[in-house]
Image 1 (cartoon, rainbow, N blue to C red):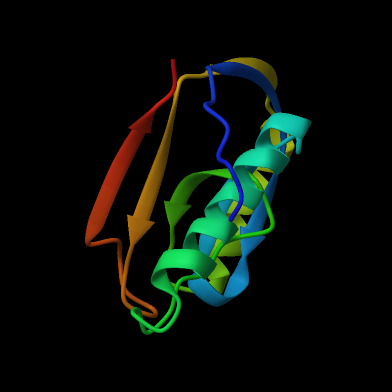
Image 2 (cartoon, rainbow, N blue to C red):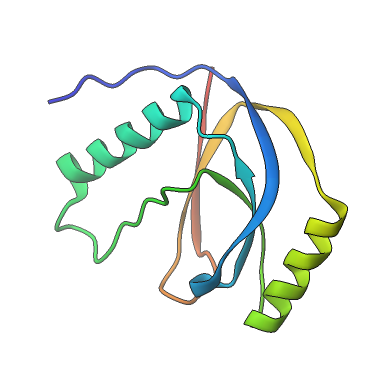
Length: 118
């Protein structure tokens, strides 16, 4: 079994907007640093070791991101994307927590859990 690393807060660059069309979600891209890749791997390992078969689904996005909004349709999604792309946004942020969210397919989030980083 893999030993999990204790994660401290870290800096991350955010840049460019994107969409998850299936869930009609507008998001801001985060640079996939070594820290984010390690966190991603640990979450996958936790799922595989402790949750496989116990949940109907447990999707882990391969795209590090900050959710901006969920829209009511594709037209609104792509109009929002155009608006945000036109204005642009890029900065370095301090990441001091992670948020796990849960939702039924095609529904809004109904559960969240915050993991604080030192």
